Length: 354
Ligand SMILES: C[S@@+](CC[C@H](N)C(=O)[O-])C[C@H]1O[C@@H](n2cnc3c(N)ncnc32)[C@H](O)[C@@H]1O
Image (cartoon, rainbow, N blue to C red):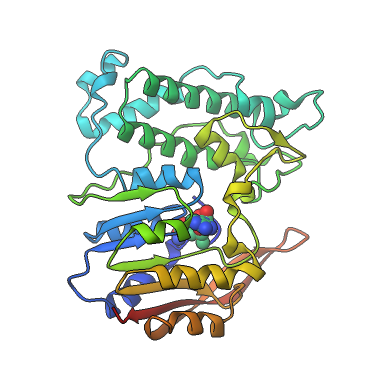
């Protein structure tokens, strides 16, 4: 998923930096601001036991699957509903269930009614986030997943796998420039393609993992990982508003929505890490409450906290240091031309005096 602040392209830098500092016997890695789960997934593949957390529910769903699921999904209770599964090898059943859901009939549900052109006709707001057909398909699949869960035809692992597959797939058909803070005024080509539900990857391994959907500064008092990795937002853009549609598809809770973009209320998910006056206090509280031996923080040189602030706070726990990497990124200007520019990505760390 194309996600603000994703560390997908920085995983090697992260791994090299972290493994050069930590003891070999560190086994528990916590990704406290997990987003897409890219970092936790990487360290899960390296054999760590992962604690993963994010305040957004769609992120919980992704992490509950990518991190929490670590055994093959058998879909045993769905065999009577989908007889084709009986003759399908277990490891291919995920593909077969997604193929079945891709082909079910669309339904004029909440996403169609509120976020497609057809659904918005003669309403106050005509939103163009999805084509009519893709919005209907999204509704039908989301409802079927919930129905199977309520009828006990799928277990929790299978439920979160299917929700993740839906979130990852539908994101590729959205009529947006990147985030859901606005939709485009004409339908782009990729949004007009016929929707296909692709199955999310499954990372098999032997470790047990913990997944949370909590505010970071609350959770920190309840966990005790060897390595604490922090990747908080670094600017004022709240994830609750930028990804509101993924939140609604994940929850499918028929929220009250408002305005041109159909935003749901996200008051209880507003992050102090996106607020210049609040961020340093929140960060200090988090660092002081951590019980980990090692703390790593990803931040870039344009973030709300200055390098001086970060060093001052992290040094309260022990020996501070940092790694840097030049990072090219693309940025849209007001004329929708894409300009490349560079930032410096930092990994700050502290070896804590315990
Ligand atoms: C920079 S992104 C993390 C990106 C992630 N490392 C990845 O590679 O996808 C920051 C994440 O922090 C989450 N977040 C913001 N404030 C939070 C808080 N107070 N507690 C928990 N999660 C928070 C956001 O929802 C967002 O997913």
